Length: 116
Length: 111
Image (cartoon, chains in turn yellow, orange):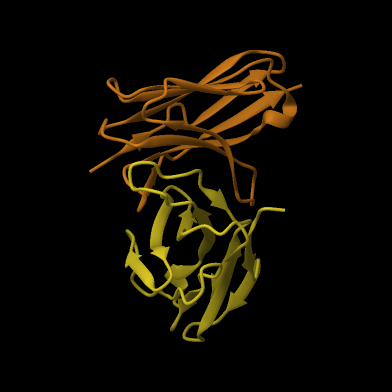
């Protein structure tokens, strides 16, 4: 089954304790991206990756890191989480054949993070 | 800067009605527009993708139209059912790097 898998789905942590949210897709998609969703602010892009070893900032990258060492995986790293990073996080992926024909975007189920 | 607006923010209709959800965007230079459904606390499920060269796409009871020149898209849902209750989001792409999302319309179908 084609899917984007995120882990953990729920996490409560404390300020400053490093954490990683994993994302894996089995569709051989080139493009992967992280979003956060907050009430009243909608979905905002954190980072994206066009392919292995190619990453770039989205709209709200502060406090986050990413890496893309393998095509299927795109982990989101919070080096020193703060309460303002409490949010619902989504990973997404799609084919990237050309910049003029971006494919359909597929989302993971989401990871709800609470930072105390 | 591209801005995407969905009005109304919430909509409640009786079961069986046909309904239209609206999405407007400020920059017509888009490559595609995608409609999603989101159930509470869940991920986004893709409903329809319309490329910029297309005028509409259909899937079952759903029909999405795109008018780039006016910066508008509509999602038509025929014969609504309680299971259609969810938040519907539209998003536009310009290039592969980024989607810009609307805030969504929260739809409730009353039995």
